Every structure is written in C-alpha cells, then in structure tokens.
Length: 384
Image 1 (tube, rainbow, N blue to C red):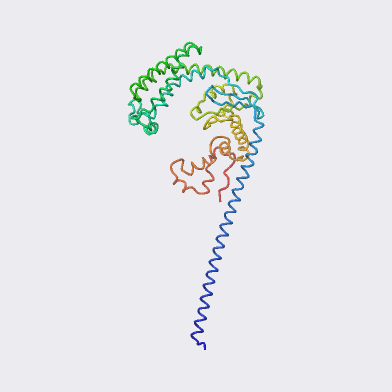
Image 2 (image 1 turned 90 degrees about the horizontal axis):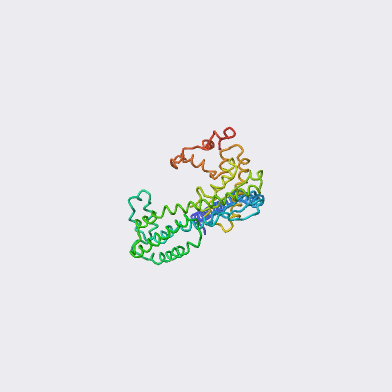
C-alpha cells in the first residue's frame, strides 16, 4: 500500500525527470538554432561574395571582347636582339619585325663577358671580404647569400674553363664578323683581357673580388664602346620603323596610338625602347599611352599579354569617370597604378606613422579621407 512518503518521492522523481527532459530539449533547440544561424550567416556571406564574382565575370567578358577592338597599338617585346615589334589594329597583328641591326646583339654579347665570369665564380667569393672602396655599396647580407659556397671550394674551375673556351673561339673568328673598326677593337680588347684573367685565376686556383674588379675596371672603357654601338643601331632601327609605321597608320589614327613595352624588372626603368618610341608619339599622350609593362619572364605570346593588359587599362579609363563621377581622386586611382584602398590605408595609418592611428578615426572622419581639394562635389554623407 503506497504511503504518503512513497507518493511524494514518486512525484519528485517524475518532476525531476521532466525537468531534465526540458533542459535537454532546450539545449538541443539552442544547438539547432545556433547551427541554423551559422548556416544562414554563411549563405548570406556567400550571396555577398557572389556579387563580386558576377562583377568579375562581366569585367572579364568586356576585357576579352575589347581586345578585338584595340588599335592602333605598337607592342614591343624587349628581347636580346633589341626588340621584336608588333603593329596591331583591331586586335590583329598587321606586321611583326625586328628592326634593330644585329650589331646590337653582337656588341652586347661581348660586353657581357665580365658578367659571364662573375656568374660562374660569385658563389665562391669570401662573404666576409668586402673591399674598403666597396663597403658603402655592397650589402653584406646580399653578398653572404650570393657567396653561398665560399672560397675553399674550387668547383668553379671547370665551368670557368668552359666559358673561356667559348670566349677564345669568338676571339679567333672575330675578324670574320666584319664589325666596325672601333667595335672590333673593343671586342678584341675585352676578349684578350678575359683570356689572361681567366688563365691567371685558374692557375692560382683562387677567385676574389679584388682581382676581378681590377679586370672589370680595365675593360670598362671598351664595354662603353660596345654600349655606344648597341645604342646607335637601336636608335636608327627603331626610328626608321616608327617613321614608316606613322606614315602607314596616318596622323589621325597615330594621335591615339598606344605603345606597350614588355620587359623584365632589370630593364623596366628607362627602358631603351620606350625612350626611343616616346619621341615619335604625341607629347600630350605619352604619359597615358606609353605603357611599360613589367613581366616576370619573357612571355610566350607577348601580343596576347599586352592586349589583355591594355584592354584592362582602356576600359578602366572610362569606368573610372563613370563609377567615381563625384570623386576625381579616386577616379584617377582606378585609371592609374595606385590601389584604390591606398588613400584610405595611408590615412588610417596616420600617413604611415603606425597602425595605432587607425583606432582614433571615426566612421564620419573616414568618409572625409579623400583629398577634398580634388573632390568633384561637396562632402558625401557620413557613414552610418
């Protein structure tokens, strides 16, 4: 027979079980809600990203189609023979030519002799031995990285002798190349001195900075002669081509000419082809229509690379004025090489004084970061 105590105990147990069930159910509900919220957040953010994906798809389509309408364009692949030139109109190559006399290549080839020797022997330098005269110019860390083998190893002898054999062969047949007299003499001087330097270095089984710089200094005047001849024939060849192409294209079309010069970083600044070409372009258009395009390596298809980049530049020129119609500073950034966020980042960093400066800028202040003197309209509403 149930007693009052057993009834109360049973009631309490039932209540406790119900409470535990409710807690478990509540926990599961909270977990389900958290999972649902996370999924909704991810979906919402993916939907935001889809806007940029769609923009890029549309942008790429416009760029691909625009390449078929670009012209006139001169494309230059800055190669070892003075440049391969392409005349393009409406996206199609009209003519391909290498306008520079081969003297350009020959003169540079012999002038590269000291660099060829250095390239073999540099890893075997003593990284701790920097000449006093070079101390302010040679970065010790750079030298330590280049001299990665060190002076105790003589593995450089065999490849240096191989290069010496190449130099000696060029010297024996130099007369047959029929070079201009002073160029012939400068090449002979470089090759003869290289032969003597290499022979002495191999005999001593020692390569060092001092002896190499004595050699390179002795042949430098002859290298300058070779540089003169390379420059002379390049100017003549490119000038003749530009004159002919300008007449072929016509002055009206030439006024809108774009020139794209592709080169490696080592020849990107003051590139020799760009220097010559700019003299044949309309002066008012040079800054915007002569484009030096840096590449990591010589592209297999320079025309495709040049037109793809030029299409981006041309369509951004128009987009900049339409998308940022109220802010000329930002429009100019889109038209140029400046990153659109650069102004904001510099200002948020306090003009480069440190990241902590960003914390002091409010949303309202951030809205005024663009230079007010170049804004087309009054200040825009503050961010909220």
